[in-house]
Length: 176
Image 1: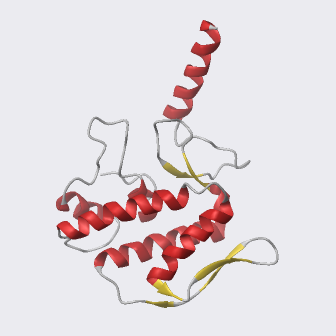
Image 2 (image 1 turned 45 degrees about the vertical axis):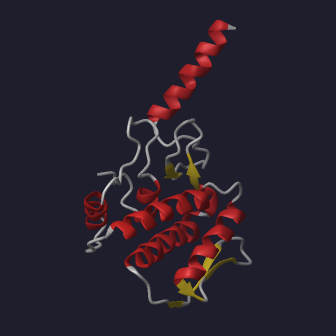
Image 3 (image 1 turned 135 degrees about the vertical axis):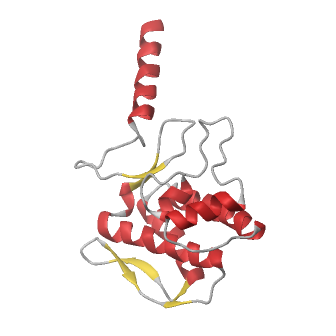
């Protein structure tokens, strides 16, 4: 089970791994149930819930793949409005992000998962900044990560990806 961060939002976004022969890490209801249980959610999903979680995963990837921090917040605000009426992330005068709370909507199990994912991403943005939520720059990797480095310049999800990129650059220099 893929629980690298402990964040439902980030871990769900990372349940597709293009490095594997079968990249789908949530292929069945049982795998989704194990994933949810590992995140403290006691749900027994049906096939429709599995399909909607796959859609949510792609939506989370779209959110964190935004080209700018402001666009990431704008995309997340769309999801927030769907799961919590009146909620939004806004920029304060000091430049930091802040959550304007709202009222939770009645939701399906997938809606509750989306609400938790949106809440976690909101917390990351308000605590660290939207620019610290990234996708790995080492194609074909699409892993999502939170840059907690001191200088905020981390570009790769792991040493594996950083080493792959550096080795590729070295080989190009040596052959050219």
